[in-house]
Length: 152
Image (cartoon, rainbow, N blue to C red; front, side):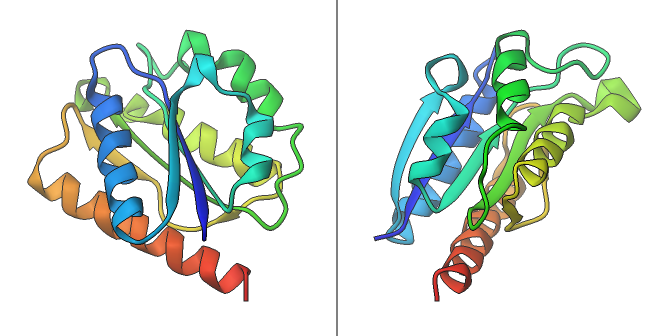
């Protein structure tokens, strides 16, 4: 059975919602999923799964989550060759060019670690709505398809 780890950081609860939607979508595709808050996770945990998902929030003017800084730094030193990753997160379009910057930065960190991008990054404005749920379901499906190809 394919395994996934979904790691999220949240202040308002929006990214926990994003993580929950992705977790449900992956479980519906017969993936065994562990979902955890970023402070409780270690980037090395990604070594034990096929699909690596991060749901970070972007703080203020494009800053990474305070509690996710060590995770971000350590992530880039991991060896995640053969793993498939996806990054989705909530932000606020109020911040313009800094909207969901952390999502893209975590994506780059996973690529640096050698993981393969399984789906385009998903940027959610504030709380996920019906359209976002559709996007996140499609995101999960693409990750599973890509991971399935990687395991063939």
